[in-house]
Amino acid sequence: MQREIERPLGQGLAMGDGGSRRVSANAVVSSLAVLAIIAVSGAIALRDRPFRMPAPVVTTTPETAETGKADPSKSATQADGGAKIIRVDPAKQSGSGVVVIRDPSAIGQNLRVAHLPDPALIEQSETGPLPIRAADGRRPFDVYARPWSGARGARVAIVIGGFGISQTGTQAAIQRLPAEVTIAFSPQGNSIGRWMQAARQKGHEIVMQVPLEPFDYPNVNPGRNTLTVDASADESIKNLRWALSRTTNYTGVMNFMGARFSADSEAMQPMLAELGKRGLLYLDDGSSARTTAPELALKNGVPFAAGDATLDTDRDRGAILKKLDELERTARAKGFAIGTGFAFDTTVDAVTIWATEAKKRGIEIVPISALASDPER
Image (tube, rainbow, N blue to C red; front, side):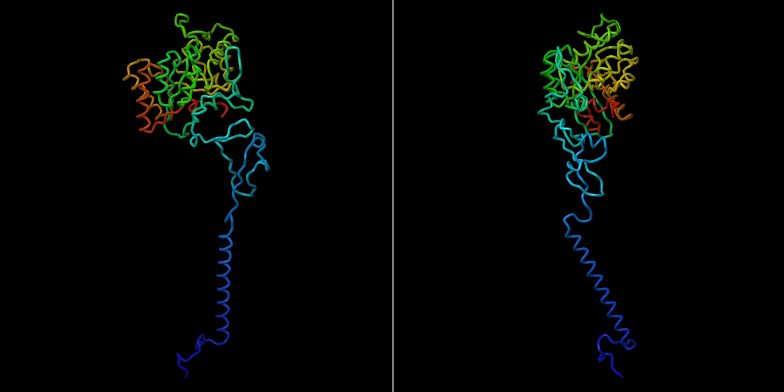
């Protein structure tokens, strides 16, 4: 009997020629499978764009946005499948027919040119430049808005008015107030164009104040060219345009006084229609519960915001800080709050101190345009 050690390799006691052939066939099949896997893996690894074709990068024009079809001549790549990626170019200026989609959280205001008006947003008049919608539909409300994060946390907008009346006070307040605070210019002020440039270069969003008739007018008088209830619609529009022409680069207007005027829908309608035509925001300071502004703003396509609190009815610094704390509680409760005030030294000091501390507590100070309800969006 042949010993185990003397038996040829590959030949077992119970395995004949058929078994040997089966082992050899299995070995060949296994080897071919391994080689196939290696070949496929190598082909994938050596491809310029493994696994999938890239999503096409599409430049969107007004025509393609309307039809929903991309223009092949303006696509960076052409490929089937995958999501389409729209090119975002924050530095590109509008006016070329290209719709540029911007992410406010990813860009900042270019302070070197923020003070320069966009010629497409200006209509020349006898009293000065008037804001107007551009031919491509852009509004001053959009173009001159200060960027913000877009986050959904507690947001507070603070609008401080009366700028331009005191030259030294205006200069000091522009420099001291945080850039996130919105500045409102009085049309009664002086050198408004110069102060507008300083405010915009500091980073402030700005609005224009419009004098509206209060109760007890003219004993209580907001100033020159006040819009009154008894005036004709044409006269009201003339006075409004005078205020609008005092400077440029603002996102909208806010009332100065005006409890009687804002309560009269017939008097308010021409003004809101004019603001809607020109693409401007209307901020109601919230001082009158009888205002008709919210309904008329919606009717006329006007971005609208209303104040939650007047900060400095009591000009004591402690009282102003208390009002600001109340504003913070409102923002935490409903997501946002709007406070208005005047450029008194005590108000500027209190707002500056409070804003610095509020940011540390997670409050975002935003421009007024960020909190406006916009019928066009």
